[in-house]
Amino acid sequence: MKKFVTTLKNIWSIQELRDKIIYTIILLFIYRVGSYIVLPGIDPNKLANLHNSAQGGMLGLLDAFVGGAFSKASIFALGIMPYISASIFMQLMTILVPQMAKIQKEGESGRKKINQWTRYLTVIVTAFQAAAYIGYLKSPANHEALIEAYSGFFWISTVVILTVGTLFVMWLGEKITDKGLGNGTSLIIMIGILARFPQAFGQEWATRIARGPGGILIMLVEIVFLIAVIMGLIMLVQGTRKVPVNYAKQIVGNRQVGGARNFLPLKVNAAGVMPIIFAQAILFLPTVFTGFTGEGWARYFTDHTNIIYMIVYSVCVIAFTFLYTALIFNPKQMADELKRNNGFIPGVKPGQPTADYIGTIMDRITLPGAVLLALVGILPGLIQLISGMSQNFSTFFGGTSLLIMVGVILDTLQQIETQLLMRQYDGLMSSGRLQGRQAVPSGM
Image 1 (spheres, one colour):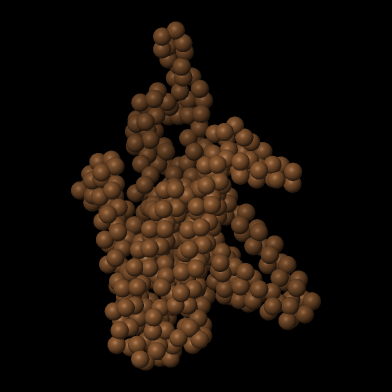
Image 2 (cartoon, rainbow, N blue to C red):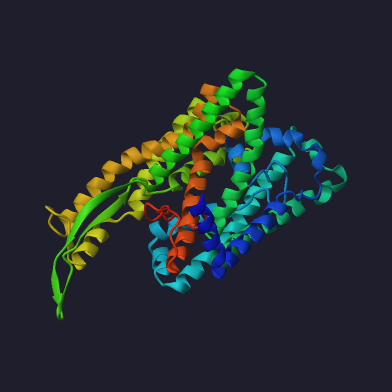
């Protein structure tokens, strides 16, 4: 406890770090306040049906990402999600389209150009999703919340306000990244997810208490299991396979360099959270095309306890894990870098044999990583089916929500520890450096 207090004092004594933390908190507070501002033409006293209908499946996940703004018909109802979708699409284009890859390699000018295109695409995606959200608000289950006198202006005003709201949230994320602490977009998503935790925990606690002493015991078991899931997820995020690498000795001037033995860390989950994001983006399309109502065949993708949803979701996650790992991981480039720096893997010839060896190892560790990632994705639905847990609380036992929270917290803590070590303070952990998460594309 004493070391913890000392660490907090060290963090607060660094003016630059203190300013970053305060700046980040202020912008996140602004975002949370905006999440409670209801759209014009909506009666906030009649949003009970909207709240109930947005508790399951993909709509519940979207509502969790935006901190409940979706079910509140807020000006930030779509949150940062359109920007994430646009970012993912643009990053895929930089990998798949040679012209886009060439622009990305132009340095700072190319990065600015791609960022500007991403913003334009965000406007288009937001306008499309805003139109679908209006259809959702006008559905028979939710239309009573609409104010009839404002119906003539509702469509155009809602599209404009939701688009501006998303662009404002995107601006907040960029400002946090530039002048604050951590990745702004990821922090905005995480704060939206955490904002729902107290309410979900309170509802689950009240439900278990109502069942008597046995319910309290079940609640304690759930808390222990939640801690175990978080610990397992940290291991999945940070798990690596260390490939030994030797460096040949060289004489440069009057001194000897090289000759060191090192390791090449290959992450078990090299794709990070992106396979889950891709899979949910695919499964989210049916609900968008049905105006978020989940009618017809789209109903299979609005309930995460449905066996069809689990199977399709797992297959998509595993497939996207291998696809995204193949896109971002280049064993040939790694082998060339080792050869250029006089490094070699013991027992393996430099060049193509080294690339084949690294690729084989990566294929072997990607399969269990992909299976575990798929299990994390469907774990909330499985727990809800087995234990009868409330849906709001079960979402914190896995899926994208928990994976994002673990990744963002590790990333932010790593930045704080770097600031401490730069000024010769002790780090956050006495057992060694804190490892951050795998870098992921803008938005996650």
